[in-house]
Image (cartoon, rainbow, N blue to C red; front, side, top):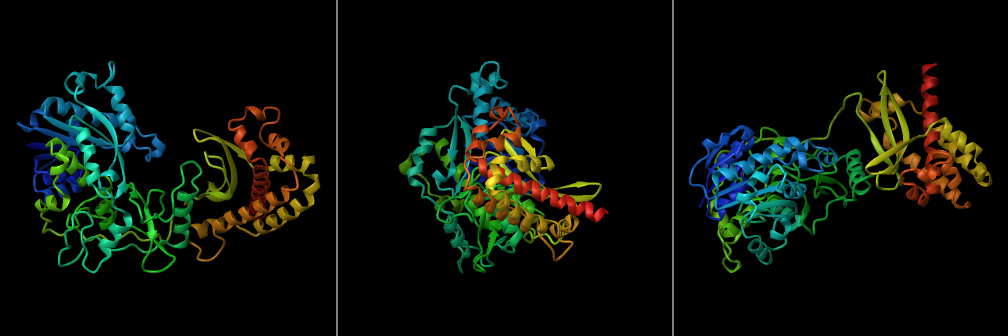
Length: 540
């Protein structure tokens, strides 16, 4: 059978199809490095073209299979919290089905992020924008979300797969697919004679390409990664470092040395340090052979090429389902990969990303305070801001829900409410003594110098995370003092919205954490007032 590959990227569909004995006669992709990578590795005709503007008359005839992965960026929840331009993204979805309806292949399949499953179901209904194709395509079509780790991909990569092939046959392959883990992939690539963790192929005599390890994360980077993963104020927690005894989470296209999306592992070069994955480790986790090369001109370009790809091991099994291969007759990956001959053209040499040595003067900082983060967006947070080029550092309290965040300004009014709160009288002296200690410390700080430490303009000084930790410690001490008291509900009401507190969004959750919120408000307002005093004193 002959196939065409739309939105082909580096050729994850094409390679999987070819390993299953299907002839990919043409692919279509707009990004030059992806097109070049596909053409050099897979050896078929690639067309660099804006597929939205592709004329249907330009498509080849006598095609039995159409596959593709329209760009998922606009649909991904990782893109701006799921606030991508859905209308723009849908243009590519529509174009894919327009091609399928024109070519009328025996089989077709489309891969995308899970969110697209619901969009397809709705748009194929009467009145939907895909309904015009429903008569031709809907009868035999299935739309399912597949977790690729079930098919031997060493990655928990959930994706929407829509198509008209036998999904039940595809799922029957799962019992023949071993579970592959992150640790096993790393172990195979790190051996003195590296072996492909998926296909059993040996590395070329010159060794692995693109397997240079990044520098370990420095302390600041480690802290930021750990915080983003284990204590994100809104999203679910992730382990840090990533566990080696199971498939890794999704390999993404866009990530930096400080990113919630980055996979971080213990660095074997030095105990107690951490690093990100190499280009080759990411490629193997995406199930590309170890001699598949990536022709990006930069390190980040290669990461994008890999993260945007569909794993060829997954498309290999889909292709076998299209060929109606029974489970007992499955072609094994080790045997199938023999059709792939690694390219002789070496890819560009791209050095791994390094940690930043300096940053722009207005580098932003934002960190939830340990001990004062309550999930669903409710947290106390230290952040910087700028006015007239001057840096300011402030603690804020956010509450409500993850979809509707409210902010309480921790200013002089908060301090006034706390001074008037009779409920605090039994412990007032102990609280004031602790806050005075915090105030004296904060008044020694110059906000501009803290910013210069954050941007690395100053080699010595107080780092913002030192302030975060001081606030944490002070809040913990005040909460300990509050243990002598009952729930400070009336104080909380006075802080938020006197007389209407019960109607405040997220009120039940606030009540569950009443004394912690009051303690955080006291410490945050004291910090803000003290740093403000520092600015006034310096200006005078």
